[in-house]
Image (cartoon, rainbow over all chains, first blue to last red; front, side, top):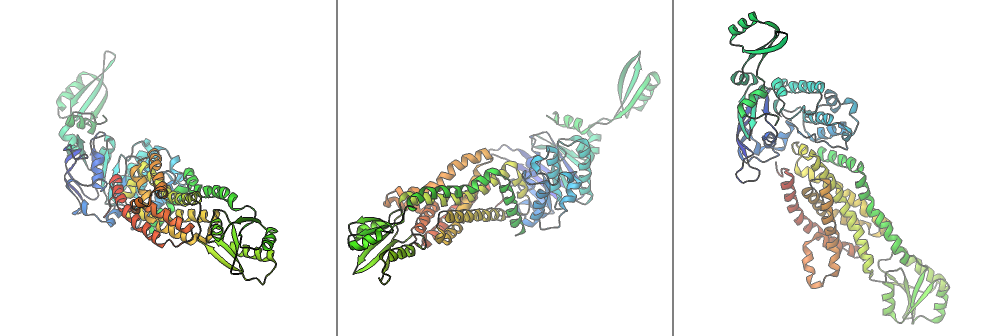
Amino acid sequence: MITVNSVYHDYEGKGYYAVSDISFSIEGGKIFGFLGPSGAGKSTVQNIMTGLIPLQRGEILYNGQSVKALKTKFFNQIGVSFEQPNVYAKLTGYENLKYFAALFSVPTHDPMKLLDRVGLRESAHKKASEYSKGMRQRLTLARALINKPKYLFLDEPTSGLDPSTAASVRELIREQRDGGAAVFLTTHNMELADSLCDTVAFLYGGKIAAMDSPEVLKLEYGKRLVTVTYDEAGNECSKSFDMSDRKALAEFLVDVNPIKIHSQEATLEEIFLRVTGKELKS
Amino acid sequence: MKSIIMTIVREFKLIFRDGITIYLTISPAVLALIFIFIFSSVQESDIALAVDKSLPQDLVAKLESVADIEFVDNLESLKERVSGADSIAGVTMQDGTVSLLVEGNEAQGFAESRQNLVSAALGTESIQYTTETVEGQNSLAYTISMACIFLLALFIGGSSLGLSGVNERESGVIHAVSVSPMTLGSYAVSKIILSLLFGIIGVSACALIMGRVDALPQFLLLALCSVFVSGMIIFLIIGFAGNQIAAVGVLKIVMPLFLVVGISSVFISEKWLFLYYAFPMYWQYAAIDTVISSREPTFQFLMILVTGFAWFIPVMIVFTKKVKMKAWR
């Protein structure tokens, strides 16, 4: 279990906090989504959690052990996929994974099998410099998984991927969760978060604006609507009804000639807008 | 240990897949070739012997039949002539015996070949020869040129690994290494070992090309004792250059610094020389100068290690701060 308690970080030491009062926890076998626009502080939190940035204030615990006291062996248990696909460009995909596998003192995946899982088997012996951005992204993800991590940190794992590959990456992330890993997912892709996360936190201006499961957030902040598209003197019109007001919907349907009826629920995107007053993709 | 070996293998692959680094690596050997073209013109002229006035005229006539003869006034002048930059032996008469004088740092077999030549020319094998060696006095240009090439060979070993590290920093892959179980110590050791290897190969190639095989063990020791200097070069470059363009800028500062500091000591008054004692580059130059003069450079080697270590520690502190690699965990 990962526990984060009241974490603050000030890059310049001038009292301006890039992130402040960040608290949450992630149990094993769960995916925690950290959502927010660019510059919200998502990567800062991930970097503090992985020890890349020193913890200044607050507490981060891995099964009760502080991030400040982590020993070398602990790093056998974590896998990190960075937003920028940072790989050795002059090594092949296979060589990249083989090299990183050798750094761990725990059983690792077979690099070729892992490359197969992320759809890079055919390009395994090509230099990473010849890969597209999406291919490098997949290689970075494969590298994060090479040591069968107990704690997995994923920063925009589907960025730049085509829908089919993104779906396969989603499946891979679910497998890690089902295998008992605690997954920390930072993204501004609401669909990805909605489809994967057990809990999501909206990060805005360096602070957590809301945090809960996607379902609870939708119930709390969203309205479930039914939209009726109907014919009116040859023109296609539409009207939305709150799902709780079924009487009004029924009466309306009697009076008009309906063409289509769609149920709608609030998206995380809309909830983010409602909570923060800002668009997520800004 | 496995991670260090794999990192060395990985560095080898990266360096040999990078054209610029290959050119950098072979550049000292190319310079050594240029060096021998320039200095061999001085050293590979026709066989010459210097004689002083003590040598009887009939013996001089016999020597003239096998070599070009240069006349000097006395024994002191003869010793001075022999210790010049070119390869020349001196012949003199001492206590009724013909003596051969050769410079102490001449190539192996030089004394024997000149002794045989003089013996054959005089045609009197029964004459007893005594061979006296005089201390070598290489020309400043010769010493500086040779030192430059060996210092460059050592510098290139470190800078190649430094550039490879800059590439890791620029691509961000160093962060992936930082969140792996590889420690800063293993990371540093793997880079330093390879730079030592490049340094050893570089100085060996230069010693072979320049005909100083006799001093090869000392040049290898020089490379080994320069372990912390190589480390300084590597981590200064990575620490101060976030990308390859910045690395070129850092090289422009670091390279002259590491080559010129030692050599500039030649032009400094002896009373100010103590200021150089804190710099390992000075001791590197002093060691090369001592090796060229066929003297024992043990003290200089020791000082390279001591001063190199003293500078290496602050460089590593700067590196860990700049790159945000955890020093201890």
